[in-house]
Image: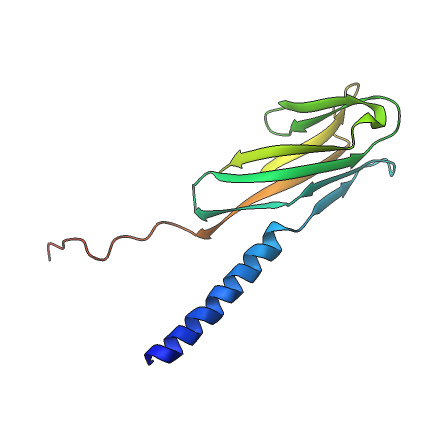
Length: 141
C-alpha cells in the first residue's frame, strides 16, 4: 500500500470512528414505568473511555415525568445512594457528573415504595480493549 492510499484509508477510518462515537454519545435511553404517567430518560446513555478500565467522565441529563403528588428520588440502583429527591412534579430534570468504569443503572423511586418505578442505564464503553504493549521494548530471545 503506497503512502497516498494509506493516508486515504486512515482519513476514512478516522471519519468513521468519529461518526460512531458521536452517535453513541448523543443517544437517549428512556424507560416507561409500570404507571404510564411516569417517564424517565438519560442523555447521553453512553460514556466512552479511551481504554478498558479507565474512568469515564460524562455529564448526564436525567429527565422524568411523575405524577404531581408524592415524594420521589433518583438513586444509583446497585448502591441505593440517593442522588436527588423532590416532591411531586416540582423537579423535572437533573444534571449529573457521571464518573465510572462500569455500566451503572439509575432508578426512579417513590419514597413509600421499595420497587423502582423506572430504571435507565449509563453504559460505559471504550475505544481500545487494553493498552497496547510497546513494540520498542527489549527482547531476550
